[in-house]
Image 1: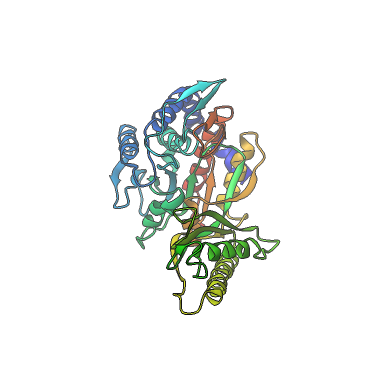
Image 2 (image 1 turned 90 degrees about the vertical axis):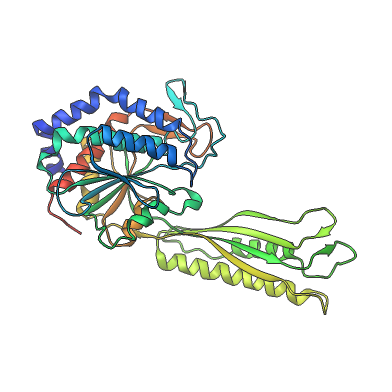
Length: 399
């Protein structure tokens, strides 16, 4: 695959596309800044989606449209099916009222979401602008998608919606997420997220002492989940991420709740973690109910699903992964095969070859208002993405 990528990169048309990327690097950064300054909290991506749709149309992409999930789709080239899909998510973890102005500090751009995922969206626009120079040899179309609901409680909403259509069968799915030039994410980090709510009668902390206490049940459950055995491989995690309940210092609460984030690269392991956590919650409920004063109401437990992200992997030997690794080496970097939770999870879990790539440069302070982006290595990331797109768009279909 290294030879194939080098041969593609050496062609005059591809050299012209790379030259466009080099000449217009400042324009790409301008798109990145413009995207970052449009608030797009999960579930409220409309303004940012409108900006991206307008840019897709201005760059000459065809069939620009919005779907029912709010995704923005556009196409380059001819042929049946979606072909090669490049996807970058629109949403951020930041509320709309947080200041989104981009500032320059010591050579870095600083703003909420400036790397995750304003950089990914700008990279989609950059590749769309460069493809007319280099896309004549494509055997299949390239579909650009700006997705909704990738972050947190969005639960990969936009990507999941794409695959609800049984005819949506890409030859390759590439999620463009954040900064970076080295990582090739071919393993999908799955998760199960849920809220456990213990409820009881409550009462005065002295006068009603002995009634089943939801906070005690929540505490027992937290301790048991923290003690769950985890396999040495694949890497897995069971985290209590939020807890709460009660409304005064001298009152037994009527509710105690906790939220869980369970993760693994392996679906069977993930299901085992979910079963273990569910059993721990049930034991906590049973323990507190057995200890309550006779004749008082029992606690109840409700489990509320908050999200399911599938796991899986694209084989390191698959041409998509090999093309990404070869393109990484071509731009002078050492590829790092990795796992992460991205829009590519959905494709991978459905047997579609999928990876996630950074869009060049360096980033830091992710999911904080002080998030930053440094464009060192930025152009290399765009060239890498272009070469992988061309390699997959010109190759015979392989699954």
